[in-house]
Amino acid sequence: MSDAREPSANPPRGENPASGRRSEQRNTASDAREQSAGTKWWRDAVVYETYVRSFADGNGDGVGDLPGIRSRLPYLRDLGVDALWLTPFYTSPMVDHGYDVADYRDVDPLFGTLEDFDALLTEAHRLGLRVIIDVVPNHTSSRHPWFQDALAAAAGSSARERYVFRAAAPDDPAPPNNWTSAFGGPAWSRLEGPDGRPGDWYLHLFAPEQPDLNWRNTEVRREFEEILRFWLDRGADGFRVDVAMGLFKAQGLPDTTHPVHHPSQEGFRESPIWGQPEVHDIYRRWRQILDSFRGQRMAVAEAWTAGPEDLARYVRSDELHQAFNFSWLKAPWSAAAFREVIDDSLAATSLVGATTTWVLSSHDAPRHVTRYGGGSLGLRRARAALLTTLALPGSAYLYQGEELGLPEVTDLPEEALQDPIWRRSGYTQRGRDGCRVPIPWSGARPPYGFSLDGTRPWLPMPEDWGELSVAAQDRDPDSTLSFYRRALRIRREHPALGDGTLRWLEAPKDTLVFARDPGLVCVLNCGENPVRLPDHRRVLLASSPLDGDRLSGNGAVWLAM
Ligand code: GLC
Image (cartoon, rainbow, N blue to C red):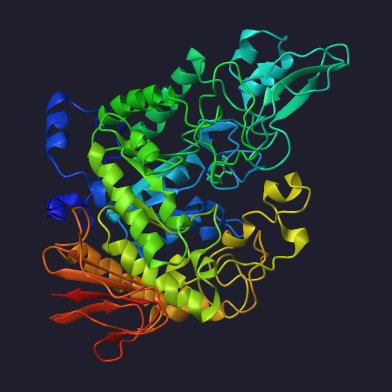
């Protein structure tokens, strides 16, 4: 198996992965040769998703920001992750909390300034942490100057060519096709014509304030290449590509035969909306740009696909480096389901020479403690799932707060809900706010050190989160936080973990047992009854206390063989 844990895989603590000086960012030919020979850091990196609004509030306005994140970087270093991913912090009207970008080259005042970004990046690099930032290419904000120009311009003008506009007769009330928005309602909104009568339609796969760009337009393609260069020049280590499978729509915009359009749902393999082949040309071009910069820059796709084989197309050797493995997140608590996802994912990525990118939670999905049953059962399972995740070959993405065992907040008052899904669904779907509640850092009452005392955080924080705070868990050796720190330390140090392959071993019912060579076995018991552990030298880490040589139900363990 390959040995990706050699010291060069991750920047040693304190080493600067990418210098902040722009003139030093571009690759020379000899850099490029050196880079392609070395181990690729992302292949087994543990990346921590920082949902910027909810991580730490530096200026006391109740909303998280870049200076807040900077002040908490030592926490992330001590947790033991390799990199952080920052969700969008660009200028935005915040209709979708930053996924509606009005200026791709600036920081929204709510989150700080460009100088704050530079300072955060420099400090992260100093601490040995890489930084990945979001790029949102499928749509802009309706406040983006391009869309404003398009609104001011005449139907059929080049300003409108950057988006997906369709003309219609004023007396025809039907939208151009039957597509619906991922947030609910039709995917089309209609402008008023110059005569005050109904005018052109424009496409928005998400909110009406997020018009879809037309990726068949050269100017759009060029603009995003420049945006990538802008942030690479500042020293960003890579990008998380939002809605990576959405940029192109089938020519002619035909009706879809599937009733559901959100890519996280089944039934979209033949969709005219998602996963059009042309998208891969874009990522080939982006790969060349990333490779032209110093210091192993990378990109990870948020690509919802029909299965692991479709997903693997995004990580072919001349395209993006990673793609989130959402089938891991979607799998129910079942040894058979987990086994199938593991086998299919490893088979698909190995065909293209990439590693898999395991993910259990994100800012778009209910937290896994709650998905796995909630309460103490959900937490037991979540800890077991973490040990399994970190033992699998490849890279893992953690979502802020999972290291504290935070549950989904399911009882946010309706008047507090902010996700556009709530309104767009006609107030029938509560949306994603429940996994976006700010992080409790310290203290017994909201805002738990997330913001200044007395400040109201942008989403209300539960009254009973004091015990879950970082400060409460910091020194408790049995806390979920201490467990994550131990797991991440062992993962970093153990030669078997990270990149490589796994070997399945015989397993009792409802249990998975696999070996990582040299010398580590992971056992996951998804059943309720205890199982006997295989012979081993030592227990490295267990997700819950062992009973002699037995692993209780809903638990996992790493064994040294
Ligand atoms: C992605 C983001 C999500 C956002 C959507 C539209 O799925 O993760 O939060 O709402 O794209 O940009």
